[in-house]
Each structure stands twice: as structure tokens, then as C-alpha cells.
Length: 254
Ligand code: 13P
Image (cartoon, rainbow, N blue to C red):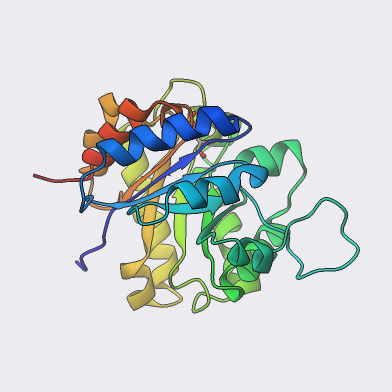
């Protein structure tokens, strides 16, 4: 089993203010060990990215966007390109979050184009997949996740996604306080890795697959202890420095 460095990212969603972010980031920087046990990333709103990047200069914390355009440039009002994000110092971009898929109609193919655009500009795409409660109840979890992922691989190619992070985020666990059990999540993560291994076993063995959906300090250690869970994509709990730091600390197996 290859050694995969754990990865913990905070998805701040539509939250924050310049003053509030300054306090949150200062508390995270102050509490994070000099050599964290995982890659640590925060994903503020677009307009707050340059400020956050400035505040984190020299810290062992990466900054990511919550979305990215699926095209390089042109007449696409309201969009922000991967190259623009790179230029201001972003290193990551979340693509295909379920809120974007469900509330803004993002298709599997569009998510694949976003992943390709991000990777092509030198960003690490954090590619989100996950089933709804109805899909889980219908026994379609693995089929849905496979469809979402295969669409991204079809557009981008797995080689282009070799450094990507995959986030399994069951929709029924997001913001609900209802976390997938470690066994439930690990089953899907294992299936994702097997699915990717059909394309390229080496890349599949190296890729980080993180879990998202009501991750908290209280459940992170049990989740991260599973063989195929390489960290977390954290929503609500990432807005609390103490919670977020404890979740990062849970990536340390010691
Ligand atoms: P919560 O941690 O608030 O459930 O959100 C998860 C999520 O959507 C992260 O992208």
C-alpha cells in the first residue's frame, strides 16, 4: 500500500468576511504545528482569496477556490478562470461540489471540463462525487459515483488528474450532522480506488480520496483511520479554528 499523505481542506462555502477570515486564519496558523500531519487547505470565497493568500504567506497552509470556470477565457460573465486563480496564488480548486451540481445545474461533463481546466493551469482539482439519499436507498451509490468519476476521467484523462484529490461527499451527510459511518465511507472509497485502478493502478494507488459530510473533531479520527480514507473535506466545522485544528490533528496516526 503506497504511503499517501493525508489531506484536510476547509470548504468555507458562502461564509466569511475580511475581518472574520483574518481572525479565523490567525487562529489556525497559531494552532497548527510547524510540520502538520497532513496537507492543510482552506477554500474561502473568490473575493477573499487574495487576502487569505497574503495572510498565509510562509504558513504550511494552501489556499483553494470553491469552483473554477470550465473554459480558459472569453465572454463568460461571472466566471473565474484557473489561470486567474493560479496568478493570485491559489493552488487548489474544488470542482463538482454537490451544491454546484444541484443548485447550479453542473453536469458530470462540465465537472470534467473544470477538473481538466484546473489541472491544465497547474491547480490541484478537488473533484467531488457523491450520491443523494434516494440514490443510496435505491442501492445506486456505487453506480452514481462511478458515473460522476468516469465522466471526469473521460474529459480530463486520468494522467492529467494524477495529482488530483477525490472527495467522496454523500449528499445526505452534508450539513445534516448525519455522518457516513467509517465503514460506509471506506466501502465507497475502496470502490473509487478500484474503479480508477482499471485505468491506471499506479495513479489510483497514489491519489488521495477524502471524505466530506459532517466531519467534526469528534468523528474525524475514526474516519481517517480507515484504509482508503485519506483525509477530509470539511464544511461547517472548518469555520471554527479549534474544530478544524483538531480535525487536522486527527490525520496524525500517532
Ligand atoms: P459539512 O461539513 O458542513 O457537512 O459540509 C461538507 C461539505 O460540503 C464540504 O465540501
